[in-house]
Amino acid sequence: MCRGCTARRFAVSTHPARVHPIGRIPQNAALARVRLEHTQAQVHLRSQALQITTEVRDATRQVVTNERRVQTTRLSRQLAEKRLEAGEQKFATGTSSSFFVFQAQRDLVQARNNELRAVLDYSRSVVDFQTVQEAPLR
Image (tube, rainbow, N blue to C red):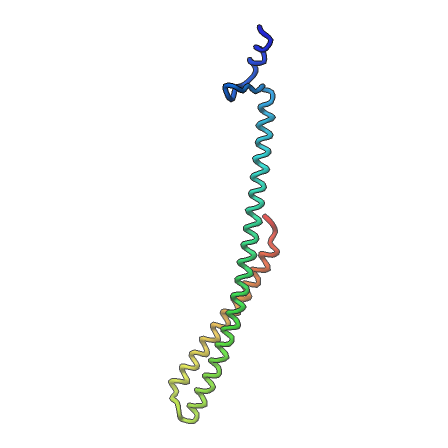
């Protein structure tokens, strides 16, 4: 047997021009597997960071939006109260009918309900914001 024949007998060819000794194939495969796992871990970490950033940004936006809703609905309720007062005064002087007073009362009740709903939504969004900030990493 020739001197190079033994080496060729225990080698695997991946390409006609390349011959790799069998002894290095498991090591190369293990290295490739470790590199792939490392890359996958980095991608997963970036994905989680993006997800957390998005959740915090959305929760912050929701708090700000609901805070503005509270301010708006509070102003609406105050205006409805003034409208009802004016309607009651007009009714007391006889320049308006009870229909307009009932309308103003209905509008005030609706404005109070809207304000209460806005306050509840704001409180819920603050809790959600705190939860997102304190949530453990998965």
